[in-house]
Length: 172
Image 1 (tube, one colour):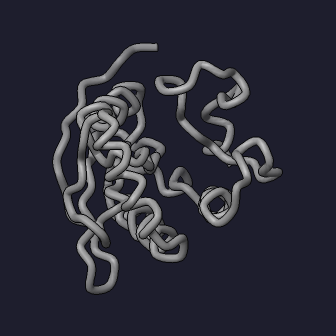
Image 2: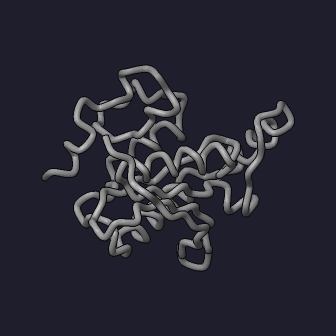
């Protein structure tokens, strides 16, 4: 696959009275692309998550990394030390699933306003349901019977994560 040139920016995503931080990466060409919301680990939108977001965009997607701890600590981004892990776990414990889902829905709505995003290629509530299922219990992604698109080629070598045709969800 040919990699495309991208542009990146830090953005604010409106969600009622809250302004959620995000990191947007999108191809420079004037085409319409599928969109992906990148949900970071407990370390926030750090340099690794920004690099992942950029790699996704270089492959022809509009990618938006969402600050999932905006309500507890705006701008949270740390490294991978034990102290950082403990700090991230505290923020994860303080995060409410319904608020996170609201923030993800706001990110999806924001992506839908971008001229570079293909209107049929923005995430849907099946993804949000799966995420809420995993947040609200000890279930893993393998327990979910719902089909979802998760771009993890750069993060997890386990092949069960990768769909055989990553564009299949965007053709209908």
